[in-house]
Image (cartoon, rainbow, N blue to C red; front, side, top):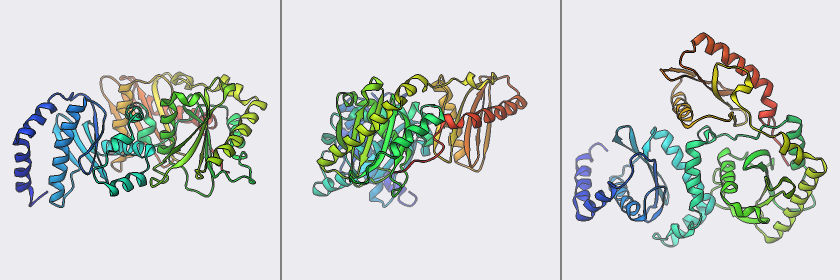
Length: 430
């Protein structure tokens, strides 16, 4: 906004000085600045969803945000990021016909990425193709009505973005499990599709307590993106009614294909006390496919029971602690394998540690630096990025650099030894 800036400033000032503008600014004062706000509205200015605040306040704020966006758009420019002071930012993310805005602390790149995931969550409920089709019929269509009753998925995904490192790493955290047992289970998934039937099965996912145990997919389609899998896990975590019976529902996986929905057969395995869930994704939306996938589900379940794998998983699949690595100087660590987009994180880390990891990750991915060493009166933190992995480690404030290097060397040795149990080290296909 260079040559048009004086005119633009005048237009924005006039918009804010109107009676309605002054009223909306007063409502804006009721916003809690300590929270990270996410607001979604359409290109026509129709409110869709807001993470915090009552409807009167959020609708008024969306009116201001929409006005700002429209004024800038009229100058053939785009609104991306505004510094609000005190480290807070306002970030816009626009993909027709949705406009998403984040207000809070963080880097512009990080907040933009988070808005992309919120959009992905909306598309998982109603595909991008369906949204565009309805928008073309009527530019004032009410998307809020279509996602009514599903707002919990949006709230949950925003919470997970802030608490689960799998999101900013775009990776999946698997349930730790003995490698031979995981291989047996994955082999069952990969052999479950009967060539004589045509259920259109493209992806199968077995979970324990809404965490991934094993995955298998059709070899003729692109590899499923970690964000799509995290969206599936968010569905399982927030839809407890799925445990009551087998479910057949449409779901869009936007990183695979956002234009249309696939169909998901979801069922819990009774022998696991409803802790293990099987998700079968099909590109065939015919009602007959439900019955064909039920056969696939029964086949998988029977094999898991007969081979006593369910009992084995329930007995042995537990998370681990940092102390299990046997390196007392390390308070916590996190390791992401770049080759398979999987991450392993010991239990027991707090939000402050995650915030440090997130900040270091943002720094190391925004430039050519491969290693960051951060030391203050509270802790020493290291992030090391190579072509094969990203390693995060936290130490006490008095630990010397030499001890840090020795400890990380020992940790990498331990991780290489444990890697077969912490990760799925090979892909499985139908």
